Image (cartoon, rainbow, N blue to C red):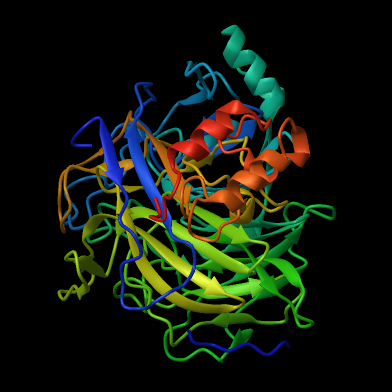
Length: 512
């Protein structure tokens, strides 16, 4: 096993969330600044969904459309997830035209419809096929709630054509396969090349709202399954359990997590070479109480998952819109968590711990950044704020951005100017920050913009001057892969528009 050091995106239409590197740790890394804009486009009320992409079109399946956060302490008098709140539709959103297309799943075979009428499923996409794992929901009769033991393969091309043409979704576009290891809800999946990890979650059976008075079953998976798509989509090639940790687990098994954030990472392997991997920041519940504040990491080929016991994550431990970024020149990973629920709050100057038990985990608007240097977690910063607290939603990346094969945005290839990072679709939103605000399934879309470093700073030295002008003029007229960082507006060619941007920031040395 390789040796590691275990230390470790409004109230107004436009929200400027450009809070620079705040926090207790100092850093010389180029700062990220975010601006969140409420899109004029409309979505559909939906949270806890899964999504797949074909070009500039995003398709959404599963999830909750009829209520916000489930009731937790209902004393056995209410159904936690009524049958009427589950989405009975598939949706397609065109990122270029802002058009939304929807179609019913009500005519599909019972096995397919039941597999799709779930919340908190996990998913992974290979080519134009989306694979949906597990999820929790009622049967079609509405008298039994359980976690699905299935994988549903969705032909996105066939679904896309039907939704755009207004035709019924073809049953042949959905294939349901039984899978014991996939019987989880609240689990997460991360791609690692041709492989992926299915991590955590729980198998819950019975109605969640009436569990105080009725018989129910809940068993945390406490496992991480590595699955090789070239071999099987259901049979793990390797499974990590409590014994596969560095350092060894203590009384609270760190794999006991659900409703968490899981993100791709590029980490050094045993020879120090950059290797696809993943990180797991946060999640609930730790030994039955509260949120996890210690992240985990893994690089493909390791024989253990690293539990970073000496690094404390204080914000956004619950599933939220998130993105992973990687700098090829420095080996630095940054993980951005766009609001959520946290074990701490932020008072503008410092993190304040929350005291008060199992369900006292407040909703927060803060955007936080967790940074790794090599394979070491080094700091957590507040880098902005969302208009409203948001969980159970995806940040769909701008397809024009430079990414690596496992989905990380490449920081060192971003132009020194504001770019559209992606869009947050719907989600479970709270009316305000706090412990128990009103919540709802959102129809809104947030456009997330980012600036990396100083605008106009082509050479990334922190100031816009003659050196940057020389680089831009040297790349004049170039297009395609040769534009480099001189293409400040990201249109694929270096020309007078880029020169105008550079000159407008002449002398600038302020990030954001």
